[in-house]
Length: 118
Image (tube, rainbow, N blue to C red; front, side):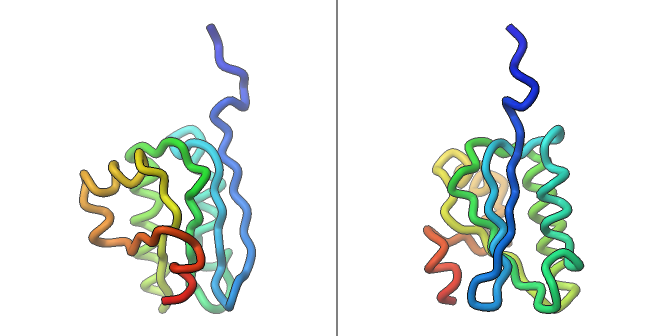
């Protein structure tokens, strides 16, 4: 049975909280859906202070494409004098980051308030 065209659609929104860009992501991050996230995490898209938290509480799946997007954003934001943090990851997504060691590179927080408090 074919999936509806938007079954795996990724929704990405950005807002500013306490001088930090919060990028909220909903859906599945894979090679067919990652484009909006890539654009939202570009240093030029986050303003003068390239400090970004990705709120991932509504991300149900992420493959290697998502990992590469996050690592590339981390590198680019650091080069621009900023940083990238992840918040509120579902257990299945956190497990993938743990298996490949990304959680040792990108700071992961249990929720958005804790990520903002650091």
